[in-house]
Image 1: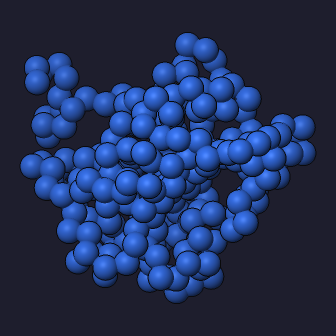
Image 2 (image 1 turned 135 degrees about the horizontal axis):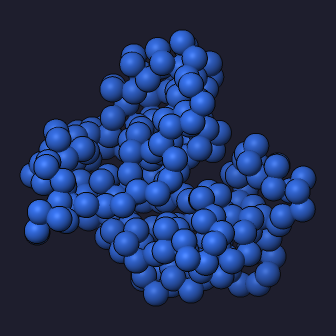
Image 3 (image 1 turned 60 degrees about the vertical axis):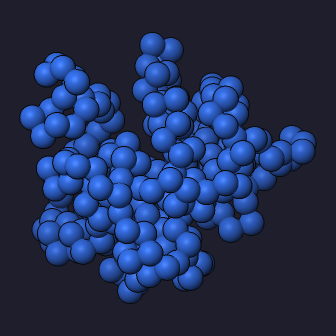
Length: 239
């Protein structure tokens, strides 16, 4: 790669457009990040600690359990709910927004302990680099950043830059769930996800109007409903 397309670490230059920091963290949140986050790392993900991009030893790191992935877990409501519901599954949560990560860690302290959650506080693409092919059995994308302006649609997760590596790390037949309240995000999802090697599992309109049986309605979803937006629940399978 040319110098213009790489960082000093050797990492490819990946533009990241979402927020990383929000309001000033309180003392407890800083404590959660300093004390809890390091031991929850899924492995050596960053380019600084793993410039060779060696793959994570999944069996060793996750005790041989099936591994699921939530991309952009926000405050961790769904992540913690699923970890509690499925104690025999390990769930990796990926979230670059530090305030959301701190919120999730606080929730884990209050409702835990949890021994089946790992957290990557950064870009999902860096995590994809070090996940072995076919290592993830289920993935979730819940209410991703909508990037509503047309010129920003390429920043959405449902583009080949993200979907191709996601497809690679998922097992054959793995389920990929997408929830959003933005009609145009639904459109782009239905166009781009099948092109990336997934099939839509819906048989009729009710299949995307009703949430999954193990779904938990998050604060963001409740806000969307109050403001008159309709949630859509799409289920795909890697083929």
